[in-house]
Image 1 (cartoon, rainbow, N blue to C red):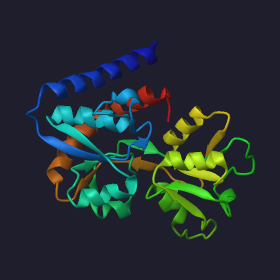
Image 2: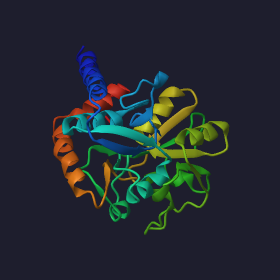
Image 3: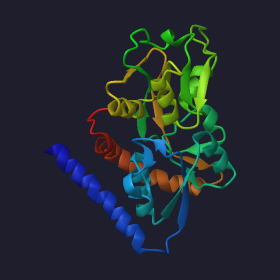
Length: 263
């Protein structure tokens, strides 16, 4: 009963944003960059009925709430993940909300908001594969990642202990292509953030298995990225985002989009 009530509250808030946005054409417009292939954070909604245009997900609902409170409208620019920060730096985008992990290398060129979600990486393998149960087991295997993501950077970085170094990494612009290749046998595993991995496993419960390896992958935090020259917009977003996080709004969105009470 509590879960149904929670779903209803979030749904009402989402619909309220859509109605509010369509009634006022005079508000300033921000361009949001995202890669809409990363459910439950961002995806193209069924029948094109999204939260912002045809797009829905945790990031879209979160941004919609923040923008509505600040008095902005938002237009979504969907592009491949590895091009998002470049577009942000060149001024093509006002901000990026795309399930993006806050990393020192990224923070050297853009500014990140306060963190709004904690995540870990998961490994996806075929359900009938019983030999791969840790990242160490992936040595010598064909491993898929989404280009430019934390999984890509983590598996290709040189690690000081020298225990796990991957050479045969296949990079995909969209994660669904990698998962399809996994199920087709072209690769042995695909690594991606836990909520997305869980979503693929839920779609194909008889064909896919997921697991985590906390000995290799550490805790990550997602943030919204801004051009370093736009500190005013960053401050405005942070003022609302900090409150929403403390109130549990992002946790509620996670439940709404996944039905999972804990991440």
